Length: 606
Image 1 (cartoon, rainbow, N blue to C red):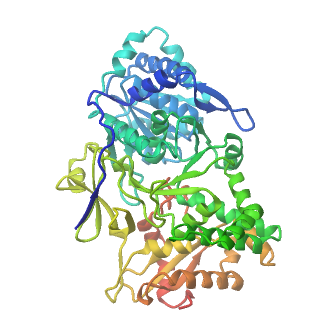
Image 2 (image 1 turned 90 degrees about the vertical axis):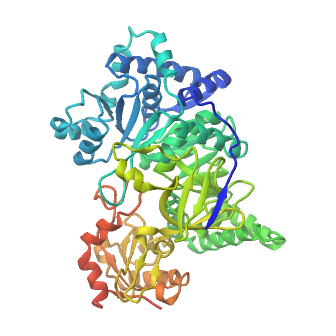
Image 3 (image 1 turned 135 degrees about the horizontal axis):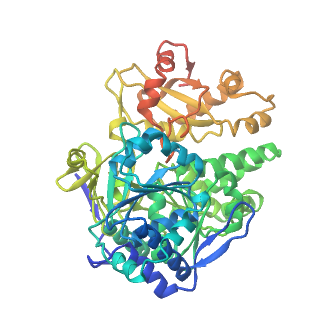
């Protein structure tokens, strides 16, 4: 049984809470920008100082108090990522409340479950459409008193409501919570079953963020650094970053619409980026397709290969050769600098989490000049448990434990975690809480290994291990991550449980398809037509063949089928954090899977 721990760097008094982080920021950098906010697409970014933000927090907190929110009561937020979410989060904490996030894509059934399970009394939603979803289930959520709509003046209404509430009442409430008290309840989006509400404490956020700043802040996010938040704030990763920037003295921006993300990156110019791997994949694939469409596909391919070879050479004892350095400079002028510019031009660091990034992308981006520090964590661990460090990076791993965190790999390969960042319990679910721990260690459900330096490598999900009819154990993540790197591929689900060999369901990327067709001198066609086209299938054959080189013959994909339906958040085959709901896919596409094993699917090259 392997185990590794990293000592705590910063001790935090038990009387502190998240409100103290903002108070410290105001005291130390009160007049410096904390948030840059813009009213809409095309508008200018307007800086808001920490002191000004704190004043707005107090005003909104007073409105919540006037609406009857008591210390310890839950308040729901259902919205895209935007400035008002961060304002509401800190206002709810200032009022002594407990914010409960809901994804803006949530169905009426999901909204009903979260509102009733968390006993939400006041809910703030972004749009009238969100309010309409709530109206569908309002009769089944009797505790819900008020629904306020951001786009219809919710913030202004709360400020007006709280005009008569004393500052002293907010000061009293701000000091009420201690490290051990619940700060938020985040419902695991989950790939199966009804979501469980993970109760994360003030201590989970405060201790982890202060120690992360102590470990990473000087290089990655020093005071004055900037990051643009575009991941859903209903997700634990984004919530942690929202709090981390307060402790780090960094400036935060919000990009609520992926359609304007590239423009927002160019305008906001972040110095560090936080994202899930799928976004990094999309940037790579779209850059490749754009180059190909302009007749520069071969130049891009050579530059990408040079970036990867250069990055690998950085890990060699002698480093890159003079010739490789020259090749890299040429590649930078022709291609790589343009990718940096698309990301805002100032970012030299990125943190990736939520799913495996893969060594290819990790080396590519480091060759570009963006050092992607891959990390690992779950909702129950307040996001990061481990992360690669600026001065200690091993691409392909998720780094060593953060300060105060401990990682153990059990005898069966499961990753166990312990530390001040681990959640308290599942809300009103003692049975699930008991199942989640063994001897004080949280059972992540992930499989992994620790090397001699304490760097963790994730190899798969314990419950997703496929056992073929021949008894071979196969971790699908290795195959899925590699195959998903092809520009034609959107999603991959590897199958084969109790079957004679491994197969795969593949979906095509509708956004990338037109560019790929054009560069291969093919006419325009829809996904359904492309899924049967011999040139497309030949390209997928080659991609599967390359993917299979990473595994043994018994683990390789032997046949696959191309679906005409992609997996998305909207059709409920992806979680909001872009993870495939494997059980749902397998249940709904049984005919396609049987097609693989009846011999009617595409035969993959061996």
